[in-house]
Image (cartoon, rainbow, N blue to C red; front, side, top):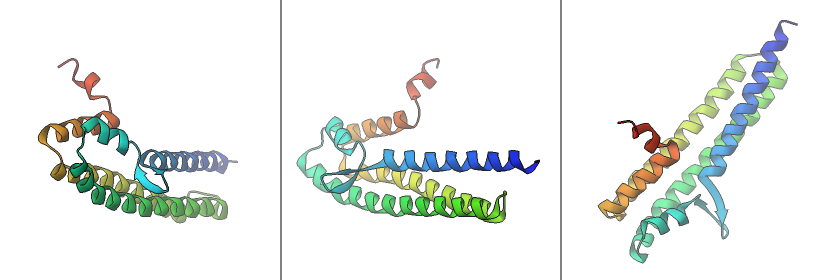
Length: 152
């Protein structure tokens, strides 16, 4: 009976990790016109007032990010499967469970790095004003900076 709280905690952790993985995957990428594009990229491109030349320059940057994100999302999906198997097979907080969680976290961290690198890489195609706007859109998506700096 003493193991039941640990098992329930582990199941809750799995659900949390799976949920976060799904949210991250969905929020970073979606299917648009038969090809994968970063969510909000059309909106961001419109908000930045990109010219056709800038759109063309950003296209390979978006494509590289999309391909990288797809690979990392697949690693997270496979990590979740490994975690589910380890939980069912081991029934406890085992080394296999911890290894699977570590794989998921590594892929999630790499996906966040890829997303941020994507933002920074776009700088070469943007004017300084557009890039500053992009940085603020990114920061706002990560947390409300306006409220953080309101008292300063």
